[in-house]
Image (cartoon, rainbow, N blue to C red; front, side, top):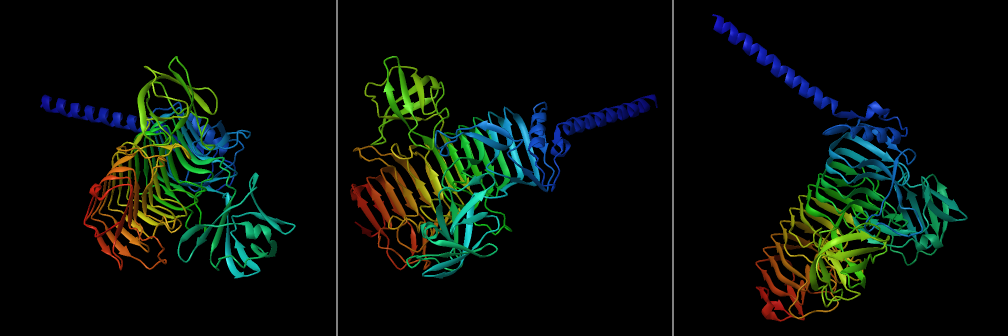
Length: 612
């Protein structure tokens, strides 16, 4: 009896201890939740929430495994009261004379183990602002949040009628404008366009094409009613149609949508970027990045066409793994995805194992691109052939354009001023899958990394240029490097590359090696298998200086979407080796044709009959 009672009391005591432990754990977890609403941020108030956001984020720094909880609804952020940082952003930094200080909506700097639960909040930015920046941080997750601009920096005009001497337009309500002495101008919160870069969206075909605003600028603008402007001038040579939408921006890049730098293990999940000014989400020298269900597109009820001023997702000098899964981009003025490193040019070589290297493209400079203990490759800019490899003992940024590097070992004997250098430590493995890319006038994916690349189960819908471009250059954009293991499989390519004729290949492997070296190939091991191509024209694949290229088991269906051009080459191969083209199914009225340049037929294994 006593034993039974003792056991009963013991069980109750243990249960109470367990309950206390559970409650204590829940309380501990709750105390790690930082609510934005506790810092004066109110949903749908249309008040400036910048100060409250800044204070809440700062409060998170005292927490372990903190969660910043947003209130839902809409909140508004202005530059006044927001965090400001001087940022030098790859492919988005221009003009040394202007300030590089950015206004940042959500700044997460020197954080570890932080979750930002957006609670489907719509964050509306005013003026030119970076939506979020994650700097020098680790294990940060941003999820369930939406960002938009009160006044996007791209203006949109719908053409309602066309005649040889006038065009009537309806200007989108979000596109603020003025008319002065018959000339139209566009402005926003704290800015005014100084020049006009125009891209036309043909709504009936869902095509984006380069265009010109010059006929409108040379004509006379007349306000006919609210948001209705008629342009009087010479439009006799124009090809505009009612329903077309002209999208216009000042091409100067001075910002980005989001910025991730010098960080590790960063995840964006269910993040919607409804407009991004400058470049898109830029990840720079960061290790392990996941984009899951990330959208770069206008809000569905906005009636806007453009979601990004330039690229959508841009990765420069990253390493580890880049995972892009179940994402969607629509309405970008440049590439949906670009993954690359940066070639820097050697400006000086000294006997003490030091070299001075320089950023060469005017939009990329001002940040550290090499670090101590990094492995590097010396590259001939004309052939893109590696000259030698080395390891760095030290690296420092000596000015905004140059770095001084000290080698851990002897300088290569054949090294000279004018050669280039690539950081091969900071090169990522890339997976892009289950995503859709549409409504862009340029390419779909730009991929140049020496580690494994997997592109699978995606839809490329009417990209203006190549759906996939594998480049590598050390003379124009200076975007490195050579690929070594690429698999492109189970994707749908639908009526792409209409802006590139006659070089309108759906996939292009196009390294910019201006001199070919016998026996050396820039790219290798690229497999394009089990994809479906819906094409209106013959060009499908071009490849240059590639060793180990497979194009097999793909299905090619013919479309009458546009008229075919004059290029009859289905595949064009230049200076390639070990190429296999087999078991592809052509549901077309034309037979596939392979054109060979600077290579022999013995380098090609194919069941295609027409080879030239």
